[in-house]
Image (tube, rainbow over all chains, first blue to last red; front, side):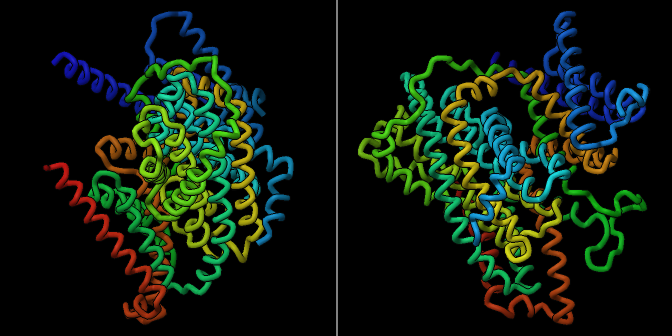
Length: 98
Length: 494
């Protein structure tokens, strides 16, 4: 009985995580152009890691922001430089990217 | 068929590096439980735009071969098959690892995968050109019959429920009708939205269906501890005595895997289990199967990798994909502006030769990588998913954006991702949707062309033995699927 209840709770938590991830993805789509790829990708990355593994530890949060920054740099080189994709710069100065 | 031409293309520095990259990425992705070769290929599709067709396909073939093999590493070391094809490997691989023979099991799994891949590659090289020459005689009626047969594969890849598979397949066909009519260029189901005039492009659809759906599923599962890999392993390089003792298993299971791979709808998991039970049936010690018999590892790994070459035979020669991975590979060919099927052999022999050579060289690279880096790969694969899942999500979305630099493609990918997740959560398989999207245009175009040629008479579809043959096996395939479904339902009830 207890196991069944725990399983149901896990299922519900899983569904909430999916819903949150979907909402985050739709929001990412909406802010991708206005905010630019760099800021929106950083926020999206941190949001997804938080949905997957919520934390209140400020150190962990700092590490994730650093990981998001590394991610943005990788994305810029992979998509922006190697594949020559015009990634939206958004509110950041254009000269930073091109 | 000039395989030397293919080898010279594959061994050009950039192509070779792409192949090595593809194989290593495929092994890593294949080794990560929950991620498949289909996801890896879908994610890398946007990167193939800037590459030549041969280079792109060489890289994707590397991912395909590596992805199927990669599943065995975590199956042996962590009791978690990275891919469905490695499920049979767990049965004996993990008990061997528990008995302190993880290195031996990994070595035999790698060697078996190599032998299976090479044997199926040789079959591909010798059989595919003959089949393609035969297929050159096809007219629109025969092509429709072939495409119709291809669509009936939907029933074979439906998994538990035929009805759900059929619904998913019909959804794929419906998606395919959006956009310009392929014959008279009349807009269909666009509802006045200009961006829908080109229909739902394949790339974002595939990324959404296979990458984003997987991302959402991983969110549902949450962060699970997959276990840790023991740093100390016994010798991985297989002993000659083991290889000698297993030679008949390698030979037999390579043939089983190639044959099952060439059958549309039957994938690596079926091949592995059929080979495993065949090895058990003919073994001198069947009682030790499931308790750590190396023959079990050799059988399942030989067969699941032999599927790769086998599955490429109908895909390349007839343009009929047998499963989700080959459907995405077929999509990659069309994205490159190539039409899979018999004309590919006459119009682009260099592409065909480089695919053939790519299969052989990818298996050699896989052997070397597997024997030297498998513990490292297992450690990477068992890392926590907190970073990996967001990375896949971001690369999927930006991959969809990169193809045209348009937000519409991102929207389409998200739409397909959400729909795919909802469908999968409710037991609907996704492979039929991809198959229907890929095969739908071929079926519709040839159906209507044939009817125009015959002035509206349906008798044209029964006018040639080839057409009748394909229609007959399509009907047989449906009846067989219905029969097995009814049988399994009855077994469940009793």
